[in-house]
Amino acid sequence: MEAISAAKPIIKVAAICGSLRKGSYNRGLLRAASQICQESISGMQIEYIDISPLPMLDTDLEVGGKFPPVVEAFRQKILEADSIIFASPEYNYSVTAPLKNAVDWASRPPNVWADKPAAIISAGGGFGGSRSHYHLRQIGVFLDLHFINKPEFYLNAFQPPAKFDSEGNLIDESAKEKLKQVLLSLQAFTLRLQERERVTMGAVSAAKPIIKVAAICGSLRKGSYNRGLLRAASEICQESISGMQIEYVDISPLPMLNTDLEVDGKFPAVVETFRQKILEFDSFLFASPEYNYSVTGPLKNVIDWASRAPNVWADKAAAIVSAGGSFGGGRSQYHLRQIGVYLDLHFINKPEFFLKAFESPAKFDDDGNLLDESAKDNLKEILLALQAFTLRLQGCNFNVSTISKFPRQSGSVSEERAALTPFTKDIGQRFHASAGYKLGRTSGSYDWHDLETCNCNNEGRVISQFQDKNFKLKDRIYNYKARARMYKMALVASWVFFLIVFILSYWVKDVGNACCRRNMFGKSLDLWEAYS
Ligand SMILES: Cc1cc2nc3c(=O)[nH]c(=O)nc-3n(C[C@H](O)[C@H](O)[C@H](O)COP(=O)(O)O)c2cc1C
Image (cartoon, rainbow, N blue to C red; front, side, top):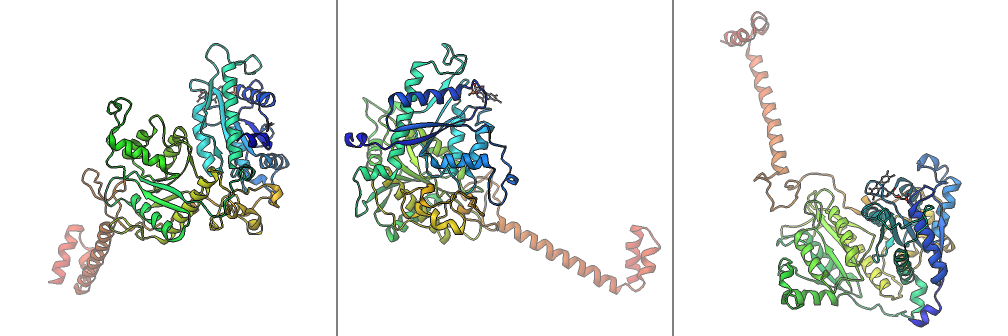
């Protein structure tokens, strides 16, 4: 590693502050970061990018495929940066409007954030602005940013002793030291993800190394659809992906976490075995069902067991798939990604895989085996992306010739497709202007819905919001087929009724006479009288 650091290339970091006010503490953090970098970090340049001139995003401002000049200039700056450092104040538990606005401008196709490493720092109230981090990380999934997990930096700006002077300059020495650790981590992660580092490391391998992937399912039930996804993934891997082995790891024998079970620094035998297994894998494929908008208890339990010191998940690549109700289990994925920050897992951003398991045509058979062919194709894309990202994190340079043409959000227009697909050919190459890539707006964009299996027919068995065929909500099972049968029967009955009325009226000889003379009750009697 010494030889590498001697020849470290210079990485350019774009520094962006979400606060517009002059004395902003968050901008103060970026000034301090820039100073620290100049004084004590070689191979890294920080450039502050002012977001205040950007107009509020309004797509009507995009005329003839061009952005307003100030937006074009901002996008160009982002494109040229190797990585990004965000200083993100927390407004109402989330990112600020100016920051979101800047993020959105640069995300317009082609998305210029794509595939860049990033870090977040913040200064704010009680939690030091940290709640904005988690929103920004989630936004970053679609932007395809790769955030460092550690260290996290959030500073309570209002707790004595003072952390900033009256002009918003950071004066707290321990905060400066932490800031330096963030910068070093961002530098290391940027170099790790970049081609040049991998070439420097001389890890070019002619043959792809075999990576071992642990497949972990958050559902315990026998016919689990999510486990079905893992079985399908394993089959796909065996049939059509070289250099990757998937092993299913059963989580059901693990006891519920109770630290009292850790005796003399030892875990229960079954937990020790599980932790040892996790340690041996290169990356993870989680099948994460959504229970009450989050991950399941069994999944959280194994995550927690393996996170106990020393955390055996640390620094590995991971991907998530899910099958479930309306969002296909997607909400559990965002919780799992957030948990992964502490675990120090590096999740692939794209593609995302959410399968609406209860829409017709049936996606699974009665044993929970995946039937849907397009879902299988999407699963394969996940596996290829996981394989590529695992190898990239491991510093292996190889040509991912089998990597698919899965549409990335940053490349969407046909004339630019050739220039915009280098990532899909060589996972390390990025969308720099130098790659002949035009910084122009594209006509169509990919949307995350493209990644879902879209079926809008509601036939099939759907049981309450929990969407599990074994789940009964107050013993009421909602069965769409039964309901459809009921509607059909009602329709037939109404036709029969009208037919009878028609025949009766034909038999009645003097209908006008019978109908018009009396009131409603008399009329019906008259009808009988007229008939008789
Ligand atoms: C509209 C608004 C909402 C805010 N919401 C939060 C919040 O949810 N959590 C928090 O810790 N601070 C909140 N704050 C306080 C900011 O963290 C504080 O103003 C901080 O200094 C802003 O960063 P700056 O110094 O870089 O401008 C809020 C401030 C504003 C103006």
